[in-house]
Every structure is written in C-alpha cells, then in structure tokens.
Length: 514
Image (cartoon, rainbow, N blue to C red; front, side, top):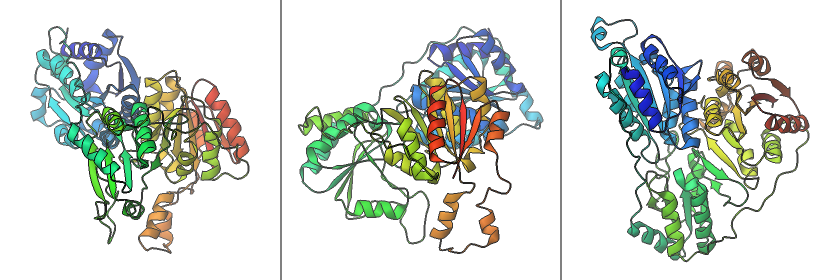
C-alpha cells in the first residue's frame, strides 16, 4: 500500500465520505487511491472555487468534513476565496494539496510556489507531509483538527513522492472533541442582566441557530421580554413554523449603531461583538455604543445550545414558549417581478425541509423577512463576503442531504464567478433549483457609490456596475452546462416554475428578469 491509499483509507475510517476535486499531475496517486477505496465518493469540479465552496456547503449540512483535492499552489489559489468564506462559516474542511516531489522542489519547476504561505490565512491547521509512513497519521490529525467544534479548515500538503512511496497500514482515527461547556458564572451574569428589567438583545450565531438553541432562545425571550436577533450572515440557521422568528442584525453599520443605541445590553450567544463590514468615514469599526454593554454568554466554539438551555432553566422559563412562529405563507404574488415578489414567490411554494443558500445580495432581504413562518427549512448565507459562494455551496449541501431539495437563491453578477457548479449539479444529478436574480447590474456597488457621497457617478463608474452589455443569457449557459432552464418575467410564471422545479428530481435553473 502506498502513502496515498493509506491516507484515503484513514480518511474514510474517520468518517470522510466525499472528495471534491480538480486534480493534476502531482495528485495522480491520490486519484488512483480513490479507485482503490470505493467508499470515498469523488466529485469533479471544473474550477477549484467550486470544489472548496461545495466542501463548505457539505460541511455546514453534514457537520463533518469533506476532502478537497487540489493541484499545487495555483490550483489551491483558485479555491482560496471560498475557503475564506468557509473559515468565516466555521465549516469543517480538509484540503489535500498535491505538491512536487520533495527532491524536485530545488529545481524550481514552473508550478512551484509557497503553498504554506497561501494556506495559512484560510486554514486553522497546516502541515506538509514528510514521509509516506506518516501520511496516514497526518490525515487523521487533519480530520481531527477540521472537526474541532464548531468546525475549521485544515490543509495537508502532500508531495507526490510521499503519495507514491510505500507505506504501512492505515492509522487509527482520532476521536473528535466535544464543544466546551460554558461556565456557570457567565450564565448567571446573563441571567442577572435579563432580570434587571433593562432593555436587552440576545444575538445568536453558530450552533445557537440550530433547533435546540432556537427553542431555548424562545423560552428566554418569552420569559424575559428581550429581543432575539441572528447574526447578519448566518452559516446555517433553522427557520420556519414552530421555531422562534428572529430578527436579523442589519448590514449597514449606522443601522446597527442605531439598533444597539436603543438597548442597554447585548448578550452574545455564538457570536463575537458586531463590527462594520467595511470602514466608512466617521464610522467606528466596533458597533456597540458606549451606552450598551456587551456580555458573552457563549463563544462560537463553545456549546452554545446547552448554554442557552441552561440560561432558560436558570430563569425558570417554561418549556413551551408562545414566541414560536405559527404556520403561515404569503399569498402567491402576481404582476411585475421585484425583490418583494421574488421573495414572496419562494415563500409561497417552498416545501418542508428545503435548504436555501442565499447569495441573492440586494434582492434577498424580502425573502428572509417573509419566510419566517413557512414550513421548517434551513437557511444558509454568504459568510465571508467573497462572492461566488452560492452555487457551489448549494451543490455541496445537496450532496450532504440527498433527501432534501436545495434552492440556490443567486444574484447574477456573483453567480458568474462559479457558474461551473451547474455542470457538477448535472453530472451528479443533484436536486438543486437555481433561481437567478437577473437585475443585470452590481446593484450593491451603486448603493455604495451613493453612500460614498457620489450621487451622480460618471459613465465610467456606472459602466463598472453594469453587466447588461452584453446581456448574460443564463438560460443558454445553463443548458450548455447540462441543466434545464427557463426565463421568467412575471411573478405568476415564477411561482409556477418554482413549484415545478422544486418538485421534480434533478437540477433546474430559473432566470428571473428584474
């Protein structure tokens, strides 16, 4: 058995089942090992950003790492943007990056690069494999590092001679760590804050947005009257009837400052203190004003759900809360397509168990506001701000949950970054419906121009926010990549096409012209 096979066998024994890959010459022995170990499912992506984004979506929904297999530094560099997003989502991922044979590096071949320096900004754990005999142990430690709660990106660089060299048997797996419990002092502090009667907000993130955390949060708010918010861009959030309907922390910093200025206390459960997405003139980076005190109940890496349950118990909150959302849907919209009718159309027909990956950007907020009482579903969003996450993340989620439909709610501009995901969806026959919000512009940039005081941008500035010249034909692109597609221009037709696509197996694409 060579090092590559021992690594893949160890990975399977540790629970890894999927490898998203775009391999090259230095990975050929790892590719061959996938034949030798049929329990590892290889999934081909036509761009490395698809592979890393799919591993992110898989990790969010499976709660365990997938592997990526990438080609040297340039291949890894193509996937870094979505690893940045995955790091912010705290998704469990193990990157295997092929490298030149150790003895060949000094020759400075054309594809040589400093892979370690590329990997460290987006990885919590990085190692260069040194020996075929140690490679399986390296893999076991990489999976353990990626599985550390709530999840992390681990990167193992595998020189080709380490992969092809003779190795021993696969290594034993390493038991995953449990999330640390929160100490009683923090729970008592939060309870004291809530009992004070002063206005308070409970801000949830990480595993606090899973069902157990949400039920506990509803108990707390029902007992004490605090407001419930989720972080602005949740990695994964359970939503719908029977769960607490959370408000969403605003995106723009002045809105957050105004919100927090109206409360005396901010209790953090699975999140850190809010900061501005960007620096703006005369606007602070940290958004909690002096009039508001922040209190950390549970950090993201801790057992947030148990901390919330413990807080609810300390407060004597009833097991059932009146704050859970009663079932309701918006009416089926009619007329012209807009972000509002788009959101209503989805919420009007979405089935129970739907997984929604939202990278709709400026078109997405009405859907979030309108879907809180729909049948139970899972909501995911763009976590790190690097656009091009939506289509691959939806792809990985569909592989993690083959029994659940997935909706990629996708802005057209950012969708062009990773449209190769459609090919992988077709190849793997995945139940992903992609809804393209075709406003044919980078609308957020027009908003930011206005916020920067540029009320009348000139033709060159406007041209850099316009993607209508030439018009991108998403229907033709989708068919070319193997996914059936239709264009819709009214809310009535959108409702019909969404209902059909979500009910039929296999991938579909709908281009909604706004």
